[in-house]
Length: 324
Ligand SMILES: Cc1cc2nc3c(=O)[nH]c(=O)nc-3n(C[C@H](O)[C@H](O)[C@H](O)COP(=O)(O)O)c2cc1C
View 1 (tube, rainbow, N blue to C red):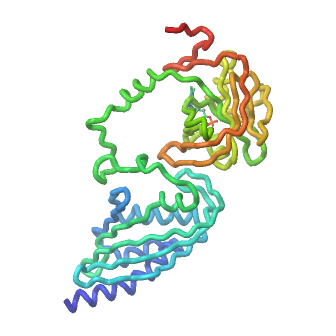
View 2: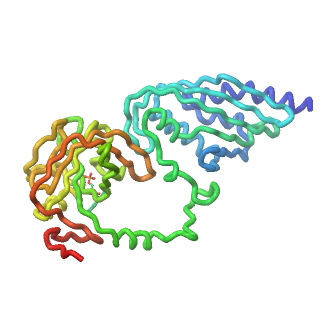
């Protein structure tokens, strides 16, 4: 018992020093002084189990995104019998550089958490955490879709698809779904129009007039879209096959050959579209590869032109549909 108290006391003293060195100054190897060689970190939220190395990498990526990060340890509670230490902390910082593909917002944030540390042989053997990076993003106003980040098999990080359709089946399912095609538009920081082809458009509700679109984070339009207050959604007409090709590919100036005008808040409305709306971006939910944008429609234009139809990678003339 005496030995346990001594070791817990020693851990407690070195814990705060190493913790602040790692989080506030990026000296992540200082954690080796307090971690057991079998250290593991368990996220209570996601069930993910990670190693000391993964934690070090996480600290460095958070520090890169929040370079002025300052951590304060508010309380340390030692439970001798359970050989555990509870640590209550808070962190302040400014979202200065991208984190997990999420563009920086410049917002300041205070985030809080508590960790339960299990001690063995005077070293921290495991750490149960209530906090993860999704919480940090939520605190800067970018919530995550929980289901996109949950482990598929009790903490194992590799996807377990047993009992689920495989990727080809899922693609096959999607290919059976017929949609129209939109071009989602915005302007970048220099006022240059940007856009991409998207068929993930969904009307959520008429009252309030909410719409949704999912955009892949690796697209070149994504960052401008994320930072915009408004976006444009143009439903392609059957005369815009070439325009779809332009916006479904990469290009420095996709608007060069186009006629377009601005919506009341500056979003590009493409002339010749079957219909266009401008909407104010209300929410941006992080999924792993995509962001779900939810926006409130502020302006709409509907033309007497037939929409284009998209099915399984091919485009069809929406004027030639026959009624069942
Ligand atoms: C019919 C069709 C629908 C598409 N739907 C989406 C979509 O909903 N979300 C998305 O991120 N990309 C979608 N894409 C892919 C983008 O248009 C494509 O990656 C484009 O090159 C992105 O351009 P950017 O990187 O210049 O922004 C779609 C492409 C096509 C042809």
